[in-house]
Image (cartoon, rainbow, N blue to C red; front, side):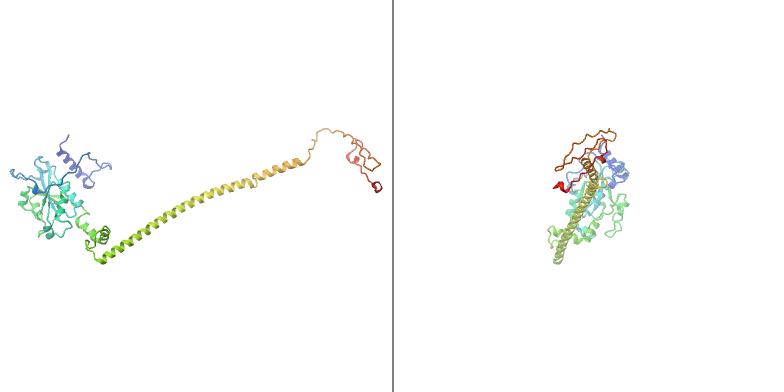
Length: 367
C-alpha cells in the first residue's frame, strides 16, 4: 500500500494534468472515480491563537525546490493565503484548493482581515468579520485561520507564523498606497501564484443583487420580512405587493391558457380518431350496401332465383321430344243436357283440329 504522501502527490499531478474543471480528468468521456472513503473533515479548522507552536525548534524556510520534492511529515510546507472572503463562494474555495495542492505536504494557513481594515481599504462588506471567519473555518482545504490578519505582510508576521510561501493570484493588487502589496513577497522568492476563477466573485454577486433589487425585495417581503428590515419605503412596499398580485393573476391566466391548449389538443386528437373511425365505418357500410343492392348484388341474384322458381312452378312439364307417341284412347261420349244428339267420336288417327267439333244449340232446344 502506498504512503499517503505519494498518493496525495499523484492526485495533485492528475488534477494538474486534467482538462476538466478543478483539474478533474476524463478518460474516454468517463470521469475518474475515487475510492469509497470519507474525505471531509469532522471539525472546523482552528484559529491560530488556539494552536501551540513549538518555538524551541529554529525556523528555517524551505526552498521552492525542496518543497516540490516533498518534505518530511513532521515538517510540512507552511503556505499562507489571505483575503476578505466576503460572501464566501466557489472562487474562494478553488483558490484555497490550489494553495493547498501547491506542494505534496502542505499546511495551509488562511488570514482573514477584520471589518475595520476592510472598510478602510476596500469598502463595506455584506458579512461581518465573525461570519467570514466561520465561513473560512469550514472550508475543507484550510488547516488554520488567522483572525484580524494584516493588510500588508511584515517580516515579523511571517516569522511569527513560520510561513514558507504566500499564495495569491499573480495580478498586482494595488491598495494602501502601493502598486502591489505582494511586491516585497515576490522579491523575496516567497510568492506562489494561483489562478483566479473567472465569472465568479463577490463583486459579481453583489452586482446581480443590485441589478435585480426589486425581484429580491419582493421575494423577501413575500417570505415574511418587513419593509423596515429591507429599508423599503411605504410606497414601494405597496407597489411590490401590487406587482406580486399582478404576477399571480398572470400566472393563473397562463395556467388556464396552457390547460385550454391541452384540452383543445385532446379534443382535436379525439375528433381525428372519430373521423377516422367514421370513415372506416362508412366505407364498410357502403361496401355492404353495394354487395346487397348493387348491379351484381345478392338481392338481384335472389330475385332471379325466385323468378325462375315461380316460372318453373307455374308452367306445366313438357314431355321430351324424343319420347314415342302413344295413341290417345277415345274419350267417352259426352251428352249435353237437353240435347238429343250426341257428339260424334273422333277417330284416333285424326288430327286434333279435325276431332274438335262444335255444337250449336238452337234456341228451341234451349227452351
